[in-house]
Image 1 (tube, helix red, strand yellow):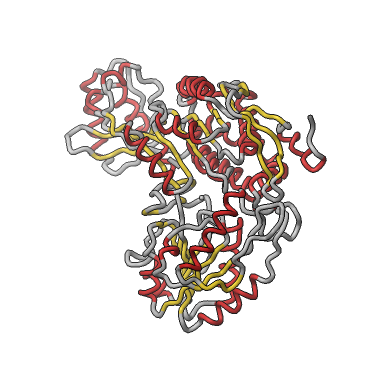
Image 2: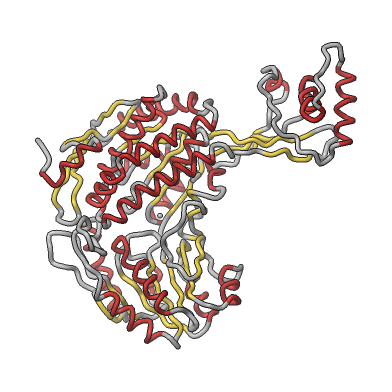
Length: 566
């Protein structure tokens, strides 16, 4: 059995016509159901995958848990070096991986390549982070005491990703988790198993090349039963889940029952506001990009367009004209702007959604129909509707844009905040006063608040996530990494051997401790130094020479702070 000519490139990234879908302790296995990965542009099979069984999962998790004991002891910069190599491995296969992602998911080729590039960028970000996982020294209320705060790994982080961003969300979570000292168990979306396998093979090659346990990165292709196993598994302190609010709530309840932690990235119902002083041309281009991109299947897709009554007609007319220029077709073809929906079920949901919209008074301004073809193509749609309609408060995962009219900034904010979801939002205005109100406590209630840019296109340097029904999780940049670690604090200096004070004295004065000096002299020197250097920065203190007894005499009380990082 071999690939058709248009799929031959898949062999360059380790994909065969039939693939095993469980990476268990460095070996590819599979004893579950056999499924086909389908091209959404024509609904024809690409390749077969043997999914993971419960037995595969149990074997893989056992190995992953054991590997965590090795990985967490590797110095963070060394872990960063491994992640750097993973990024380099992805670079060498960027075009192939991007093409596979577009083929299997349905997004246009520039978006597919861009998504893989985002994982590479996350690797670069994580490499720098590996040398900045800093703790702190906290002033103590007790005399002659100090508190040290340090960050330790959780152990294993579970990552459950969705079909719409099968690579990027993995990168946001796994790159951070790995440099923080955690092993990763990944369950990719059941409808994008090939990209799961291709990514895992590259990561596995890097681990093998460095003589590290392959189980540090364990992955499974499978359905809800594997996701449920991850949610229930007490060996996984943190589970990151991306998907619908309905399923996310079930995951959260399951994980919470065992006192685990969840990072949830769920539904978005994102609004873009156009004020009467906005740059209308800029706003229209941004709305088109945000509403049509990825066929409306981004978590950050613009689903609600709020337009001030003074510029309403102008904005709508220009937007309708722009929609006429959208090329719909094969996502791998140059010039295509709108590819297919991911599955036939998605196309059916689009049809049902349009019927509901019409039943609630929605007026179709353009689109509103499926496109008769072998693939899952639909027309990009603009709907004029009341903001009070129930359907507006739901997320229809497709290229459907609701256009809503408002009279004042306060009314626009009220409409923006009136939905259960709270991921992304944006406003177009030239007014500094309006901008500061928008980003302030009485403005948008979303996790991502934009000004004069689309609702989509989040940067990895910031923490990605939303509020309310979106789940409250934070991934990628900023201090999202603190969700992948646990704090250990409360170190008592009085119980430390005297040699610790000698190190302080050497660093601060450059005077080595004489072997004839007793502990009393040492303490006197330390107290004098402390009086003289109240605000001195005491850096480069190395504890490597302290006896292991130090850690036994001074155990740190545990202050758990769990959680991790579309």
